[in-house]
Image (cartoon, helix red, strand yellow):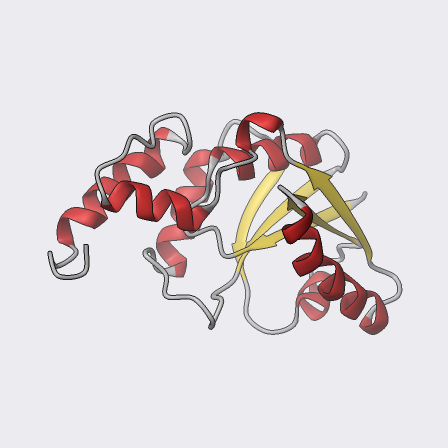
Length: 165
């Protein structure tokens, strides 16, 4: 059984992420979407909220499981008996960010392969940070995120103080 991990902060999960999960699910027996708390970001959703949203958004993909982790990705992959890390790439900037991290993982854990999947053209411009900003200014995010995520974002933004909006 080949297990792959799609790690990320997913704050929020976008249709671009879902596309990567769907495609990875056709390549591997099991795909674990691993949510981590990126200490360099200020998330809109808690880790628990992101996990719950991801479970709803991926319910249609039978071999996808959602989990959260802390610590080193290589250690987490070994705990889950995963030998593949899948990362989605939108552009060259994503590659420049992800490639050194993939090499660190390969150095730490030579048994783990890193796979990059390029985005579908219709999601090239979609990022979690752009979604958050667009939603905060009243933009239409309907076709950019799963419906459950759209509802959660609008609910969350209503609770954010006006001075932060």
